[in-house]
Length: 206
Ligand SMILES: N[C@@H](CCC(=O)N[C@@H](CS)C(=O)NCC(=O)O)C(=O)O
Image (cartoon, rainbow, N blue to C red; front, side):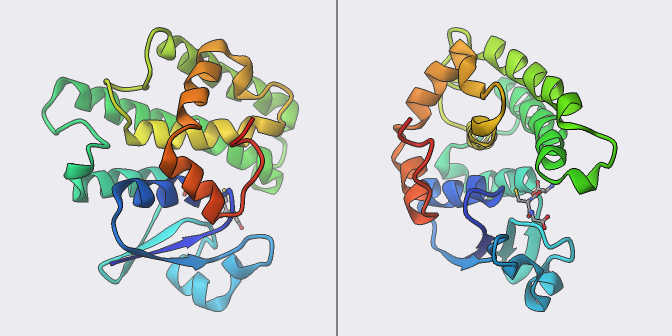
């Protein structure tokens, strides 16, 4: 059994979505950022950074969104959310997971939490994010998924990050291949379900 500590629309959404996509049992536990639950003494004991997500796996807390998606893919290979180890697509999958975790994740962190990166202005972060959309948009030309022929953890992470851009000066939907890709992603039942469970009504029906 897993226990997921989550906050609406936060980085935990990708892990929440994956658990629903896999159909595995889990206990959702709110660690809402807006109400400060992520800073409670109990939560800080589990995750001293106070960030979400934290997933308790076999009694031990595990953190970092990309790592959690990869861990869940490894523990549930039957879900098909990662190419098989040793396959040609596996290297691409690894590279895309690490790319998203190294590029967009920190850029968004600094965008939303400017105190983490004093001196980095929104104006300096915007081109960093937009260069990532350029690269992802190129990748999506003629493709339905970022890696391979089916949904993978890369799509879960990328889609969540695309949602985060919705109020930026140029949201990801301004890139044509990403816009087409998101129309498809937004129709996926588990993505719609996670939005409903997290009480999110914006973006999913755009
Ligand atoms: N590197 C972490 C970043 C997670 C993160 O930044 N989470 C944000 C929400 S999107 C958070 O918990 N913010 C509350 C805080 O930092 O106090 C990961 O990939 O999981």
